[in-house]
Amino acid sequence: MKPVVWLAEGLGLGRIPLAPGTFGTLLGIPLYMVLSAALPWHLYLLVVLAALPLHVWICSVGARAYGVGDPSGIVWDEVVGILIALTAAPPGWAPVVAGFIVFRAFDILKPFPISWLDARISGGLGIMLDDVVAGFYALATLQVLFHWWPWTLGD
Image 1 (cartoon, rainbow, N blue to C red):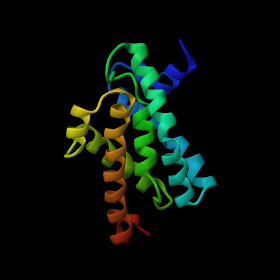
Image 2 (cartoon, one colour):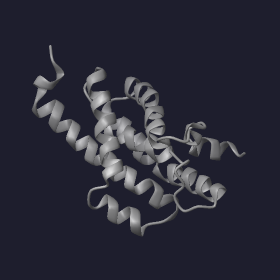
Image 3 (cartoon, one colour):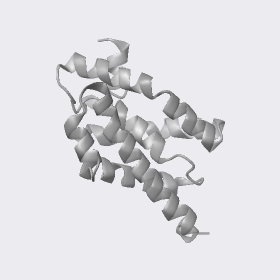
Image 4 (cartoon, rainbow, N blue to C red):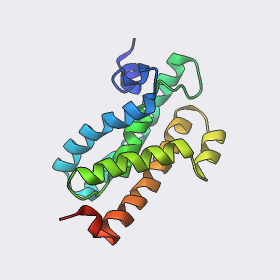
């Protein structure tokens, strides 16, 4: 197996038969912790977004290896989606857990335009795009939750 396919599978987590996208999302959390500790939020987001062509390529190669348009085993898109969702999250585990839950909800439920994009755009771009939008929906939700209602952080 090519190393890029293994990466597209979330270091093999995409091969877990039950809820591979959830495990892919979990893989993004340690990466978030490293990047967010090293970079201010605006540079963090710039790094994640600047790497989007690379992310699309990783998903494209993975999908070609499976011979399917959007195989469930390709979970790198979930890694990127949670990285977007957690942009500028306040410190602590509550925002990370909330980000995980909210991102997975948007990724699974696919509210408009996520479902529209998912149905109409194929290849690596299509694989990535619905999770990128779900990540931005989750990011907006978290910002409202933790910045407009800071009582949610507790004492």
